[in-house]
Image 1 (cartoon, one colour):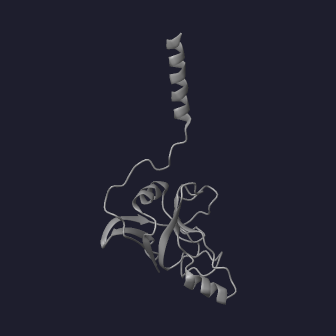
Image 2: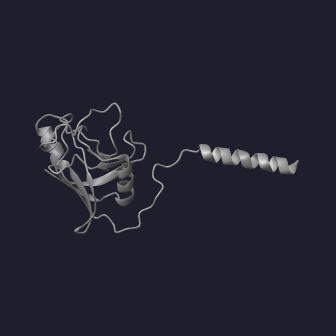
Amino acid sequence: MRYLIAILVMVGVLSTASCARKSKVMRQYDGPAVTQIVVSKSQRKMFLLHQKEVLKSYRVDLGFTPDGHKQFKGDGKTPEGRYFINRRNPRSAFHLSLGISYPNSADIAYAKANERDPGGDIFIHGARRKQDPKGRDWTSGCISVSDKEIEEIWLMVQDDTVIDILP
């Protein structure tokens, strides 16, 4: 009887473990630290750097109005300038996402002088969903990569990493 109970307990533990939600990111990164992210909007490329060495590069999609610096909520532009990675969202609607510190004080002051909202919630995130617009640049101002790529970026990039977004 003890043997039967032990088997039933083991079956219960194993079946519960197999139903547990798996983490979106299971690996670890043990390479050189990413010291800077550079996004070239004109090239639709993002580069992860260690000092001056390019560690990885990615093709990106941008805001639906890609030219120019984001100024106001809803303008569809991706910001330009120097920002920082300031938060992580493991439950993002776009698989995973890393927050960008837009708006900074200059962005806020400009919007306020124009009696507008600067917007916010700008991220590097995973791929488009079925309900998102088709075409090259489709986000509301974010930087999008594939789901596999955001998993890699998530592991490589730490909070407070500088991100320079170039025109």
